[in-house]
Length: 238
Length: 187
Image 1: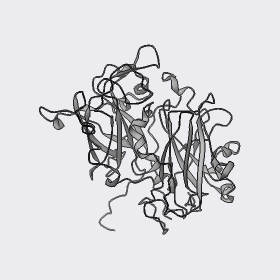
Image 2: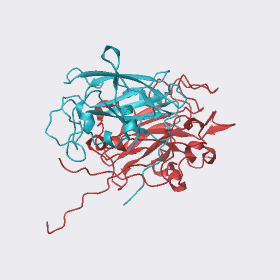
Image 3: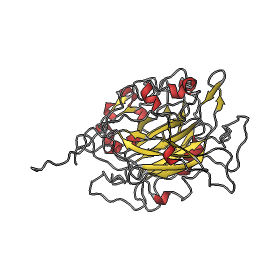
Image 4: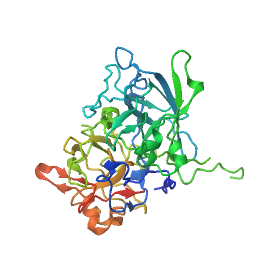
């Protein structure tokens, strides 16, 4: 059995604490005992592998999942999935879900008084290509109120779920939009302690990928945990 | 080049919209060898209330102890179609149930074999970063020597071992706070 090539621990400040009082629901849902530090074994450095057979051709296009066009501003969201060593993660699954343009989810628990769009389900998935790139077509999600505190509103966001190469690189995050005035009031966004790490969850306006007379574009790169040791190139003497 | 991992965010209350398509009630299809087990449990918050908007994911080896992953270079047989992954949402009362096969033993940090286990990741509204833990099987003699289980304080070890319930179903709860708080991992 070869030695495990372990993954790095998270850099301080980049990840939220489980107990974050500004997000009220964490109060009864965070562990109170310290986490048990355990070694990374084959069980942690392996993880599920997905392929093109798992997806349908329209899965990445949230505007083409029904008969009609969804209401809203069409957007293209693309980017790369990388590890902390800057290496692209090819053929890895990316799942997204989001509210419609009015800020409403087609979900039984969403009671927000805003219209449901019969032409928008709000879910998509894609595999990254050989260079770790993904691309979704969607509509810009609306902001919506929630009951965390008085007059609480979530900034516009798209949920992202990623796997990477290992069960321990599993990551669920949210993509935000540049210039959203709600960000600094949002407990979820503000739960990331380090300001630079927070900003990395905000997508960038992406001129290059806009489609004239059709759609604006946003770029969002996601970084998953990387290996501690990266295989060195062999020196000429070897 | 060195980057930092993106920050984790909660799945929120509408997780089902994006994640349900991969729901799995049976991780091991008909062609997969091994002892069939059904695991039933509840995801319970600090008030003892079931978490109705949670989700667990399972990752496991087959009965021989092989993972369906390119970095598992053991010379073991893997059934075609066995992925070893399951995604199970909780119901309105916080309950979850899935069927699979008892995993085989896989190598541990010192080259010795680990006790059979399933790796578990927990997601829910109100949880900003996933929780990781394991389920072990009741009465397995290998549990006593397991290198990971032995790092859990003795008083909390039982939280990672399923119990035999009625009709052969294994019972295993995930308790977020309190006396029976499940041991969660950092790796």
